[in-house]
Image 1 (cartoon, each protein chain N blue to C red):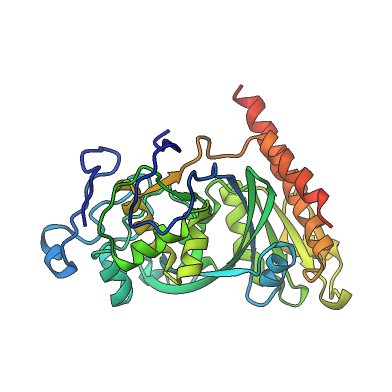
Image 2 (cartoon, one colour):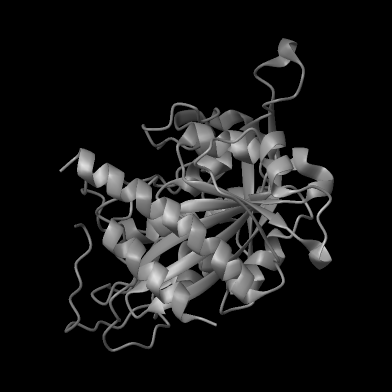
Length: 153
Length: 211
């Protein structure tokens, strides 16, 4: 697996060695969001083997910007790369805008695993992750939702 | 922004994606539907969603808050929980996601992720087990997320009046307590509209305080 954007400071390259090789030098989840101080130590997360392997040993490396409802699309400028089956499946779903939660549900991947892989695919330039500018919705947007809801029967 | 659409370039990739030019991604907004097990969260989500509710599994490590054991304040548990969610397309550029989430306090860790950017929450209550929703009410109050208490009237029956429910939950005056029927789309829609009213109030207040 390659990370063409490894120089991008926003998405530091993550080692993709096998978990057992990684455990010494890089504690699991070596990249962790700085904003969340309540986060439990990664060592105490005992997920099953398979999700652990899929994410190269990371259990909490998900980008905090990638929420459940965050929309994801294929990056039309993406170059060809070899991807794991899980990653190929994710990219395959993103021809149309789709949320992280939908990807997780349709591929039956754990949500946490999905978030990590989507973050990796974003760093690799395969996916566009549409992070919203403003975290809290503005009144105009809420008004549109209200009007839309009122219109349904 | 760190995503740039370059719709004119089209490079063959491992992508199975069809599109010549991807559509502009809609803005997602979300509402949380919370409550204890079996109070009708999934029914609520299913009634309003345009797709059959999907289920995502989240593996969560979280502190077992609220368990009466001061000697093990650091006790952590890893739990796989299933979360149901639905979608309602408002228009081409706006999508409403409705997430149903278990209301137990030991899942509080997940809620932090979940409520980020959420418009508001509907706390579903079964009057036979009112205390099941305490953790959700507590959490949303502390998080400052607008929420509405919705008593699910299974078969039109309520063991207690709305005033009694309000008294039992001791929610603030400005938190609406209403009854609805999770099986009916119109009823769920009306309950969500009350949530959105609360969300709108908060958004307007915030906007006026930070011009």
